[in-house]
Length: 255
Image: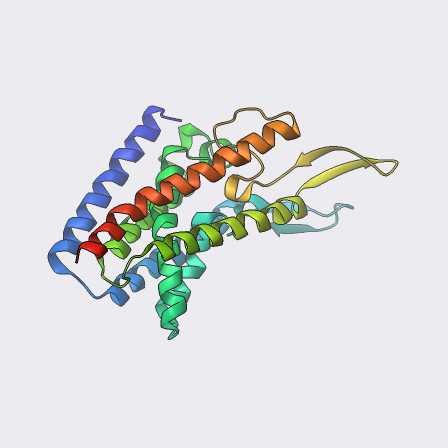
């Protein structure tokens, strides 16, 4: 984290965010058109990711080789879930559901993508730092999350939603439900080892929504430590979401 390659990518991402936001403020394209462009980036990004990380894995007897997508690349992270949400809000005619999802997407796109760029897990799970400008996954990761930040700002500026504190609390409820479900999903995709029916250890696990392990690499060795981490994670989400909502709700009340 914060190697020179990482810093260069942050500068590139910042420049792209500024460029596209300034262009948006000048041209004010329809929100549906913005979503169209975002969908192009989403689908292209996912296509690049899948075909960049597919592995050819032999069968148990070695007679066949199958393509395999590592489980940690499934689109179940907060940022990758946005692909499904952007698709839904682009084509749905259910305005109430659309507005609720946009209110949830706003802090998810903005703060979620900012956190991902600040702590790029890709360098510890997929590629090395030395591949930051030679591997397609680096471009996929940084450009996709840059797009999410741009979309987050545009959702806030577009006037599509009349921001209220009810949106804030609904957003927290959605995140809490997703976090709880991630406990099931992370366990489902883990690879435990048993001996005589007793769980010995876990050889591999995923970490969707970071509910199993912190992204900073701080070791958690007890259930009490994990509870503390979970409380800190919940507090951080609530505070960051509040920071996103406060200026918008205040502005809406002042109008």
